[in-house]
Image 1: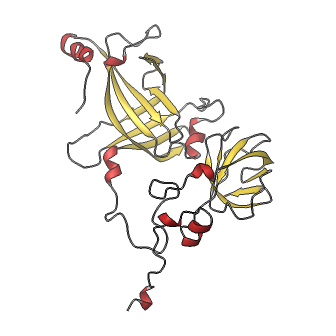
Image 2: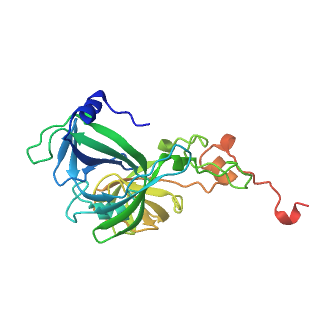
Image 3: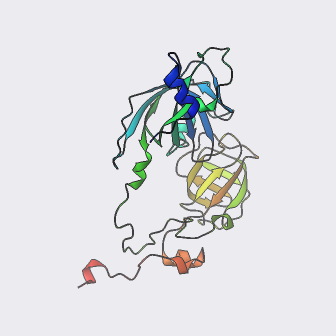
Length: 288
């Protein structure tokens, strides 16, 4: 059920004229918050500023049962617009930064028209209309096609959730696994390289980072994570190339992977007490 403020209720009941705009608040998985409006001018609502972006959406359908409702978006971006001074929206989409982003759609009912002289609009006039997770379906040129599925999508899990497998059923670092990833995260500085190979001064055993991850915290690739193919003599090879070749001084951090075996859990992470694999299950040929 949508909760409207008393000020908004009075506006809708007593005023014959008001102006409507869509406001989008997009929270990326790295914590970055983007604010856009479908109007052609910037709007300040409460303490937040929304910049114009060409977003078209279909009508929303919402039910009171447990089905997953969806909203479809068509976004036309400005090729020159940057998210962080370096990365364009399309580049961020290609880098996976918008994957599983949380989208809030607010409907703004304003007593004043939207013009370049419009001042601050009270946030009480905005109503949360939709909340969901973003899924990019197609992106190319300047157009992005996406769907936003309601949060009931998170209930789409397999049951039973725990099955008997030889490898561990937990994900490295989650609450069930319990491994503190900060203890295994190593900071590094690039000395150069290409989009696929990062050169650094890290002294790590060759192959230790295979299937692990590398995340840049500085430079043009900041916030972008890639899976590591292998590492050797300070050189880190990634599976999917970065958008930009690193330059000397770009900061990053790396994490080793877990192959979900009992040996890896015990030797690499010292977490055998929480290992939830079942390596001694007989293979089907010897089960009977």
